[in-house]
Amino acid sequence: MPDTNPSIRTRFAPSPTGYMHIGGMRTALFCWLWARHNGGTFILRIDDTDQERNVASALEPIFRAFRWLGLDWDEGPDKGGPCAPYYQSQRTHLYRDAVEKLLASGAAYRDYETPEEIAAQRQAADADKRTYLSSRRSLQLSDAERAQYAAEGRSSVVRLLVPRDRTVAIDDVVRGHVEWDCGLMPDPVLMRSNGGFLYNFATVVDDAQMAITHVIRAEEHLTNTAVQVLVYEALGHQPPVFAHIPFITAPGSNKKLSKRDLEKLRKNPALQKLFDRADEIFPQLGLGDSTTLSPVMVEYYEKLGYLPAGLLNALVRLGWSLDDRTEIFSLADIVREFTLDRIIKSPAGFDPEKLVSYQTHWMGELSIDARVDGCWPYLVQAKLVAESPACPPDLRPWMGELVRAIGDRLKVFSDILDAREFFLADDALPYDEKAFQKRIRDAAEAPELLAALRDALRTVTPFDAPTLDGFVHGFVESRGVKIGQLIHPLRVALTGKSVGIGLFETLALLGMDRCVARLNRALARI
RNA sequence: GGCCCCAUCGUCUAGAGGCCUAGGACAUCGGAUUUUCAGUCCGAGAACAGGGGUUCGACUCCCCUUGGGGUCACCA
Image 1 (cartoon, rainbow, N blue to C red):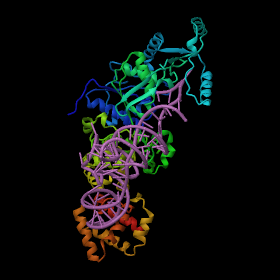
Image 2 (tube, chains in turn blue, purple):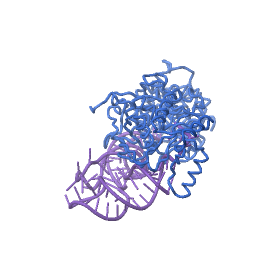
Image 3 (cartoon, rainbow, N blue to C red):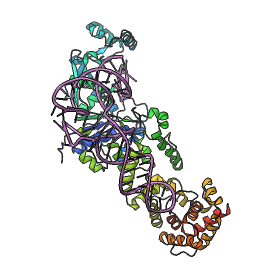
Image 4 (cartoon, chains in turn orange, yellow):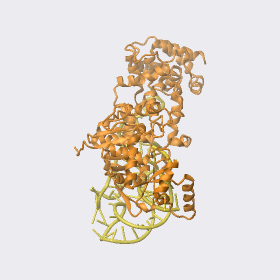
């Protein structure tokens, strides 16, 4: 058992965006894992500094995603905790105090230059191919001028006074030693002219006040870290340990997987199937389509009936591995084995195929009963069965047989909808016309064979798969035809499709009466 | 463009100087099983970006080049 450290505190700070991004979820997972691995504390803090929207409803999908995956938090908005409140919008007094402290110590200054002036300076620097640096003219102001400006209510921002004669460095757990030259940094704004605070500042104040020991976040924040470390130092705090993890990219590309590029992602060959499946399934469930629920959102996987274990397994293997052979991890395994030093440095492409393979594994671990329970809500939602919170007891044995017959074809719970023909009324069965043509109309002996079988079927008892297997084989033998000549047309006649579960299971599941009814209907439409 | 990061099979990765004729998984392609599909079993192909060093010896260390990415806001 590796060393653990209960004093470790990590946090994840989502913005209320109205959905949970798959990449963000992976970051959150790593934060959660490090806390849990150590028996430490995992904190959820809401980054709602620019709260235009309805925070509560925009937060709901985020909480939902955490709960679905089984990632709990020890301190957070709904739970409270020793560092409350956990909404940044309610913590402005802390930021204000920190700004005052920095102003008083001279580590920060009030800057009266207008945005236009700054922009002009920036442009001039660009034109001269010079690194832009803050002019710091406001520092030259006399006390009298300062007082006058304040009295006039002239607008100003508070900037950190960057110590230009040195460097800042971190020893990132993942990246190693990274260093920046402060002489190249403009003075960052800490507080806006309207009194609002900036991310790079608020985050540091929060992380320090919440005693976060490990900041685990996506690599895109690496550059921000320079400013943040300077703020830690100016405030007199010890910076936490940083771990900048590689981000998740779109399959076959090395661009960040983002919701903005949805249209590009739609054309990505590896993602195509996921979008198509969404467009096929979600409308049946009354959930919109791939535009409302796309593969970059955690909700996509939940709503399609993926298993938390499947997604979790896939997510943790993106940028992390234990050794040269272990692929399958339960959440408990991951918690036990997860360490920061096994995180990879390079970006990881999200591979839907690999996700499916993990998913298939974990689905296989589930009992038939559990699979029935997982599938049931989809049948209800698609209105294929009568509304009921769970599969009724009298239907359960039959459902169990169906799910057993579907076997590995059931990769996610919504795949049960591919077996919709078992739930449709006999006179409402749609036919794959191409298959019907080829297997029934164009096969000379098919109609007669089907009719004969229909009549013979009435004598079969018990009407179960093994018996039917023997019976059908005897039937074709006695007629001197090959099994394939019967089986293909029979499948189309009974299910309307050319592919599906085992044929004898299909017969048994349908039962004699429905088989006869469907055969009659098929024969009548030749 | 400045600064920063990254670079092993198509993909996810193992590899902390000799264990590497580079291992595993997913995907792909064969073959077997089979009533379709899925699966299962067996097998195959498939990678250290390039160039310099260091070293008896480099996938592993250093430098350069190339390529990719991130970031440069009174966004987060």
